[in-house]
Every structure is written in structure tokens, then in C-alpha cells.
Length: 412
Image 1: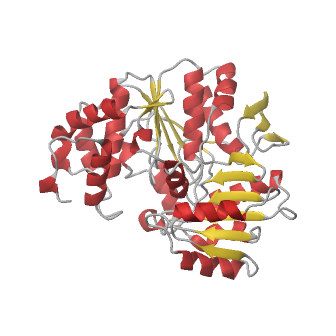
Image 2: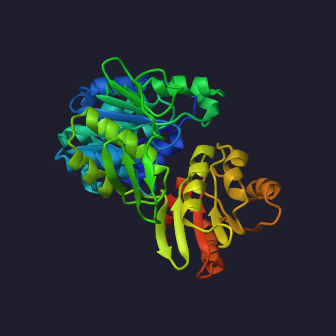
Image 3: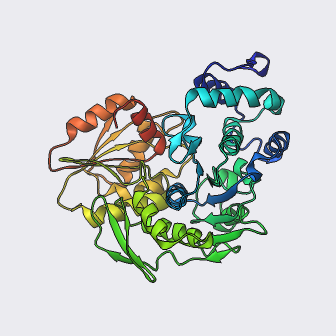
């Protein structure tokens, strides 16, 4: 759809979503903040009307954002929460106190902003970012917790001046945009820690802000749906999720909350109340069903370690539904998982690897795994479910986009 066909008013968020996606430039072809800066200036800088916690990193940024937002809400603040990618609807990026904007409210805001911004030709990510920042201003939030999309330095979210900025981890991901070395990637990510901001990081590669030892917690035996740990003088902190890797994110959330003056009772309550969708999420017990959107080597290693902590992977059959975005490092991501698998149903989504490509790489890592190729996700899901026996462990992993598709189809 070309720009001269742009509607003056949108009749639905789906229409806006389709229009922006169809005219989006190729990834990386217009990597700058210029359009976003102009958009913010035209709107009177909505991002300056509340305090911002800005969170980037290769892994863990989404969960860290969710925990911080939950803590701030527990402390009595009105909190905007901007995250990406959205799993079902782009309106998941317009959330205040865990409530997503309604279609009608969002559409009125879209049509208010569109005439002011149309000539800037904002990308889909840019437009929904500025939409969220304006929505938070309209709702008069006290805080906005904002997740970086990709990198940091030129990410559309980096027009904010954060009170607290966090870089969780640094790993090899999005190398086409951020560079092929950890140093280059770290430089992009640490750009969100600005002068005047409180900077925190779990990576020694980040030279700005304060390093936090995210591995300093004392773990108490995890269960499928809870994780308990001690951190310094705080004892028996509870998370309502399995996955020991979430403790690292929780420690950064704790330190961010302390920097903002949040009291310990609110920190504890907020961490316990945080709901992490698509991250070591248990959906059933017999058979055991676990969903985790691990899509890069760091995330997959963390997921597999968490799985081994609560599941007898040597004696229980592991049946996996898998798809992966084609821009990711498929071999390094599959490596931690491959030898655990007994059966894999390989499927697709928009911009994923082909099942044949996944099969080739997986076969090189595990000669004994049984593989079923079904490109249609709904049919693949049905095959996966039929393949499971009551004592098996069924996992869905490889991408949040796959999880989002299945949630949209009401299969999860």
C-alpha cells in the first residue's frame, strides 16, 4: 500500500497495523532517531511528562520490565508499560496498570495523532512507540516502563530521558544491525544509560552505570510454578514462575526499585504478583506443558537449565513444537536443546526459517530425534498435542511470534 493511498482516518487498529506493515522499510534501512525526535517535538514531548524506566539487553528485558511495572504498581503508582513484540494485538504496547487500551480509545488517539505525523512516514514500530508514549501522557501515569526494541542507540524508544536505565545482558543477537562483536553490541545497548540517569547492568561489558552481580542470589529449590531465592538481606523472595533464570531479572528489578525509593514490602508483593506470559509458562500438568519464547542462544541455554532443574529430562520423553525467526542464529540456539528432544514438530510463522532448514540443522545436532514437518502452525499444534502421552513433557519454544500466533488462534 503506497503513501498516497493512506487514509485520512483509520477505522480499526487492524487497518492501521496492515497499512504500516506494508509500507515499512526493510529492517535497518532507516536506522536513526530523527523521525522519532520530530514526532515527539510536534506532540509537545509526551515522554517528558512522567518518569521513565528504560530497559534494554539481549535477554531478560521483557521480564525485567514486567517485574518493575508490577513493583511500581504495588507501591501505589500509576504505571504505563510498553513492551515488544506484542503477542496477539499491537495494543499490548498500550498498557496502564496491567489494563490494555480498548480499541475505541486507541483508535481515537491514532486519528488524533495521524494528521500531525503522517508526513514523517513513521515505521510500524516508531508509530506504535510514539502512540504509547502519548497514551501514557494522556493517562497521566507516574511512571512508564519502556522496553527497548532492538539495540538501544538508534532504537525508537531511545528518545526518552530515563530516571533509571537498565541493560540486562549482552549477547550475539541482531548482529546485522548491531555489529558482529560483543563490544559493538554493548556500545549500542549502553547508549540508553544517559547523563543524569541511574544506570544498572548485569553485564561487565557495559561501561556505563553500576554493575550488579545478578548471580549473587542464593537459590532455594525451584518448583514448576515458583522460584524462591535470597538476595542479600532480603530472604525468601518469591516469584510466581518457574525458571531459575528469572532470578537474574528479579535482582535488577529489585535494584531499580531501591533506586526509586520503593519499600521492601512493595518489592516483594510486586515480584510475587508479576505475570510473565510466554516465559517458562506452565499450561498443563499431565502431560506437562511448558511454553517459553527462547529465541537466541542465551535465552535457550537459560530455558534448558531451568527445565533440567524441575524435569527428569533423561527419563521423560520431550516432545517439542518449534519455529524460529530467520534472522536468528539457528545452530547456536538449537545446540542447548537438541539432545534433550525425542520428537519435534517443526512449523513456521511469517519470516521464520523453513521446516527443511530447521530439520537439517537439528539432524546435525541430534541424529536420533524424530521430526515431523508441518508448516501450518494450527495443524502443527494439533500434531504436537496428539504426540503427547500423559507422562511426557511437551514444550513450545523458539519464538514469541509462534506463541503469539497460537494465543491469537486461542490454542494456548
